[in-house]
Amino acid sequence: MCDFASDRNTGTFSLFALAVVIFTTPLMVSAYQDKPPPGNTGGFGESSCHQCHFDHPLNDQEGSLNIHGLPEFYEPNSQYLIRITLKRPALKRGGFQLATRFAGGAQAGRQAGSLQPVDERVAVMTGDDGEIQYAHHSEVASLPSFRDEISWTLRWIAPEFSGASVAFHVAANACNDDDSSFGDFIYVKEVVSKVALEQVRF
Image (cartoon, rainbow, N blue to C red; front, side, top):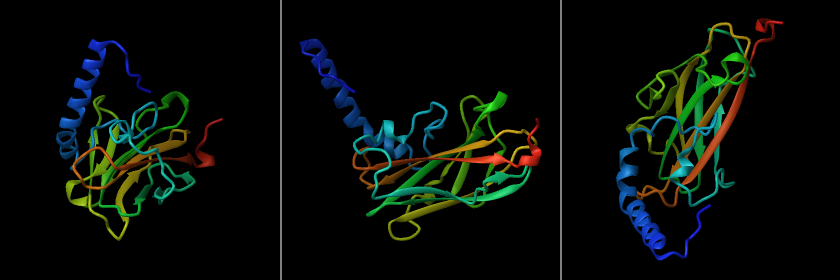
Protein backbone atom coordinates (compact mmCIF):
# COMPACT_ATOMS: atom_id res chain seq x y z
CA MET A 1 0.00 0.00 0.00
CA CYS A 2 1.08 3.58 -0.64
CA ASP A 3 0.33 6.50 1.66
CA PHE A 4 0.41 10.17 0.68
CA ALA A 5 2.45 12.19 3.20
CA SER A 6 1.31 15.63 4.28
CA ASP A 7 4.85 17.02 4.20
CA ARG A 8 5.32 19.30 1.21
CA ASN A 9 8.79 17.96 0.34
CA THR A 10 7.60 14.38 0.53
CA GLY A 11 4.58 15.25 -1.57
CA THR A 12 6.78 16.88 -4.20
CA PHE A 13 8.99 13.80 -4.30
CA SER A 14 5.93 11.55 -4.63
CA LEU A 15 4.66 13.56 -7.59
CA PHE A 16 8.08 13.43 -9.18
CA ALA A 17 8.27 9.66 -8.69
CA LEU A 18 4.81 9.24 -10.19
CA ALA A 19 5.80 11.34 -13.20
CA VAL A 20 8.90 9.18 -13.73
CA VAL A 21 6.77 6.02 -13.69
CA ILE A 22 4.21 7.46 -16.11
CA PHE A 23 6.73 8.73 -18.65
CA THR A 24 9.06 5.74 -18.54
CA THR A 25 6.36 3.06 -18.60
CA PRO A 26 6.08 2.92 -22.43
CA LEU A 27 9.86 2.41 -22.62
CA MET A 28 9.70 -0.39 -20.06
CA VAL A 29 6.83 -2.16 -21.81
CA SER A 30 8.34 -1.92 -25.28
CA ALA A 31 11.57 -3.37 -23.89
CA TYR A 32 9.71 -6.47 -22.66
CA GLN A 33 7.79 -7.31 -25.84
CA ASP A 34 10.30 -10.01 -26.71
CA LYS A 35 10.80 -11.29 -23.13
CA PRO A 36 10.10 -10.34 -19.51
CA PRO A 37 13.03 -9.92 -17.12
CA PRO A 38 13.93 -13.18 -15.32
CA GLY A 39 12.53 -13.95 -11.90
CA ASN A 40 8.90 -12.92 -12.40
CA THR A 41 6.93 -16.17 -12.14
CA GLY A 42 5.45 -15.48 -8.71
CA GLY A 43 6.97 -18.65 -7.25
CA PHE A 44 9.49 -19.11 -4.41
CA GLY A 45 9.24 -15.51 -3.27
CA GLU A 46 9.62 -14.01 -6.74
CA SER A 47 7.53 -11.11 -7.90
CA SER A 48 5.30 -11.42 -10.95
CA CYS A 49 4.26 -9.18 -13.83
CA HIS A 50 1.72 -7.72 -11.42
CA GLN A 51 4.33 -5.47 -9.82
CA CYS A 52 4.29 -3.32 -12.96
CA HIS A 53 0.84 -4.13 -14.39
CA PHE A 54 -0.96 -3.53 -11.14
CA ASP A 55 -4.26 -1.75 -11.84
CA HIS A 56 -6.34 -4.95 -11.92
CA PRO A 57 -6.41 -7.77 -9.35
CA LEU A 58 -4.52 -11.01 -10.02
CA ASN A 59 -6.40 -13.84 -11.76
CA ASP A 60 -9.48 -11.87 -12.77
CA GLN A 61 -12.34 -14.33 -13.25
CA GLU A 62 -13.10 -13.29 -16.83
CA GLY A 63 -9.83 -14.84 -17.95
CA SER A 64 -7.76 -17.93 -17.22
CA LEU A 65 -4.24 -19.36 -17.31
CA ASN A 66 -3.58 -23.08 -17.53
CA ILE A 67 -0.69 -25.51 -17.95
CA HIS A 68 -1.50 -28.64 -19.95
CA GLY A 69 0.54 -31.81 -20.44
CA LEU A 70 2.01 -32.28 -17.00
CA PRO A 71 1.57 -35.71 -15.41
CA GLU A 72 0.45 -36.11 -11.83
CA PHE A 73 3.54 -38.32 -11.39
CA TYR A 74 6.60 -37.73 -13.57
CA GLU A 75 9.19 -40.29 -14.61
CA PRO A 76 12.84 -39.22 -14.22
CA ASN A 77 14.59 -38.30 -17.50
CA SER A 78 11.27 -38.45 -19.38
CA GLN A 79 10.23 -35.71 -21.79
CA TYR A 80 6.89 -33.92 -21.64
CA LEU A 81 5.34 -31.38 -24.00
CA ILE A 82 3.80 -28.54 -22.01
CA ARG A 83 1.19 -26.16 -23.40
CA ILE A 84 0.47 -22.87 -21.67
CA THR A 85 -2.88 -21.31 -22.53
CA LEU A 86 -3.96 -17.76 -21.68
CA LYS A 87 -7.57 -16.67 -22.28
CA ARG A 88 -9.12 -13.26 -21.81
CA PRO A 89 -11.95 -11.36 -23.58
CA ALA A 90 -10.59 -8.70 -25.93
CA LEU A 91 -7.06 -10.09 -25.62
CA LYS A 92 -4.78 -8.14 -27.97
CA ARG A 93 -1.36 -9.47 -26.98
CA GLY A 94 0.03 -11.83 -24.38
CA GLY A 95 3.23 -13.05 -22.81
CA PHE A 96 4.38 -15.52 -20.17
CA GLN A 97 7.27 -16.72 -18.04
CA LEU A 98 7.62 -20.20 -16.52
CA ALA A 99 10.12 -21.89 -14.19
CA THR A 100 10.45 -25.46 -12.86
CA ARG A 101 11.95 -26.00 -9.42
CA PHE A 102 12.03 -28.71 -6.80
CA ALA A 103 9.08 -28.18 -4.47
CA GLY A 104 10.69 -29.50 -1.29
CA GLY A 105 13.50 -31.43 0.29
CA ALA A 106 17.17 -30.51 0.33
CA GLN A 107 16.94 -29.09 -3.23
CA ALA A 108 13.82 -26.96 -2.69
CA GLY A 109 13.82 -23.97 -4.99
CA ARG A 110 16.59 -25.26 -7.24
CA GLN A 111 16.28 -26.00 -10.96
CA ALA A 112 14.34 -29.20 -11.65
CA GLY A 113 15.07 -30.80 -15.01
CA SER A 114 15.47 -28.59 -18.07
CA LEU A 115 13.27 -26.53 -20.38
CA GLN A 116 13.61 -26.48 -24.17
CA PRO A 117 11.77 -24.54 -26.90
CA VAL A 118 10.13 -26.59 -29.65
CA ASP A 119 9.63 -23.70 -32.10
CA GLU A 120 10.33 -19.99 -32.52
CA ARG A 121 7.40 -19.00 -30.31
CA VAL A 122 9.24 -19.83 -27.07
CA ALA A 123 12.73 -19.06 -25.80
CA VAL A 124 14.61 -20.05 -22.64
CA MET A 125 16.99 -17.88 -20.64
CA THR A 126 18.90 -18.34 -17.39
CA GLY A 127 18.37 -16.13 -14.35
CA ASP A 128 20.96 -13.95 -12.70
CA ASP A 129 22.03 -16.83 -10.47
CA GLY A 130 23.14 -18.80 -13.54
CA GLU A 131 21.00 -21.79 -12.54
CA ILE A 132 17.23 -21.24 -12.82
CA GLN A 133 15.83 -21.47 -16.34
CA TYR A 134 12.97 -19.23 -17.42
CA ALA A 135 10.91 -20.12 -20.48
CA HIS A 136 9.13 -17.16 -22.04
CA HIS A 137 7.32 -15.94 -25.15
CA SER A 138 9.29 -14.63 -28.10
CA GLU A 139 8.48 -11.38 -29.89
CA VAL A 140 6.78 -13.25 -32.75
CA ALA A 141 4.50 -15.11 -30.34
CA SER A 142 2.67 -12.31 -28.52
CA LEU A 143 -0.37 -12.17 -30.79
CA PRO A 144 -3.46 -14.33 -30.06
CA SER A 145 -3.50 -17.82 -31.54
CA PHE A 146 -7.29 -17.72 -31.69
CA ARG A 147 -9.88 -15.13 -30.72
CA ASP A 148 -9.32 -14.13 -27.08
CA GLU A 149 -6.73 -16.91 -26.63
CA ILE A 150 -3.00 -17.39 -26.96
CA SER A 151 -0.89 -20.47 -26.30
CA TRP A 152 2.73 -21.56 -26.24
CA THR A 153 4.31 -25.03 -26.30
CA LEU A 154 7.65 -26.13 -24.87
CA ARG A 155 9.43 -29.28 -23.73
CA TRP A 156 10.28 -30.21 -20.15
CA ILE A 157 12.88 -32.90 -19.55
CA ALA A 158 12.33 -34.29 -16.07
CA PRO A 159 15.29 -34.44 -13.69
CA GLU A 160 17.23 -37.55 -12.91
CA PHE A 161 16.27 -39.44 -9.79
CA SER A 162 15.61 -36.94 -7.02
CA GLY A 163 12.75 -38.22 -4.89
CA ALA A 164 11.16 -34.75 -4.87
CA SER A 165 8.09 -33.18 -6.45
CA VAL A 166 8.52 -30.41 -9.00
CA ALA A 167 6.68 -27.07 -8.84
CA PHE A 168 5.81 -25.29 -12.07
CA HIS A 169 5.19 -21.56 -11.68
CA VAL A 170 3.94 -19.48 -14.57
CA ALA A 171 2.88 -15.85 -14.84
CA ALA A 172 1.17 -14.38 -17.90
CA ASN A 173 0.06 -10.96 -19.08
CA ALA A 174 -3.17 -10.46 -21.06
CA CYS A 175 -2.39 -7.12 -22.71
CA ASN A 176 -4.54 -4.42 -24.28
CA ASP A 177 -1.56 -3.48 -26.52
CA ASP A 178 -1.52 0.23 -25.68
CA ASP A 179 2.24 0.35 -24.96
CA SER A 180 1.70 1.03 -21.27
CA SER A 181 1.50 -0.89 -17.99
CA PHE A 182 -2.14 0.06 -17.52
CA GLY A 183 -5.27 -1.87 -18.47
CA ASP A 184 -3.53 -5.28 -18.56
CA PHE A 185 -4.56 -8.40 -16.64
CA ILE A 186 -2.01 -10.62 -14.89
CA TYR A 187 -2.52 -14.31 -14.17
CA VAL A 188 -0.36 -16.67 -12.12
CA LYS A 189 -0.54 -20.43 -11.75
CA GLU A 190 1.21 -23.17 -9.79
CA VAL A 191 1.11 -26.87 -10.73
CA VAL A 192 3.01 -29.59 -8.87
CA SER A 193 4.07 -32.88 -10.44
CA LYS A 194 5.06 -35.60 -7.99
CA VAL A 195 7.89 -38.04 -8.55
CA ALA A 196 6.76 -41.58 -9.41
CA LEU A 197 6.21 -43.54 -6.18
CA GLU A 198 8.74 -46.23 -6.97
CA GLN A 199 11.45 -43.57 -7.30
CA VAL A 200 10.96 -42.15 -3.80
CA ARG A 201 13.58 -43.13 -1.25
CA PHE A 202 12.48 -44.16 2.21
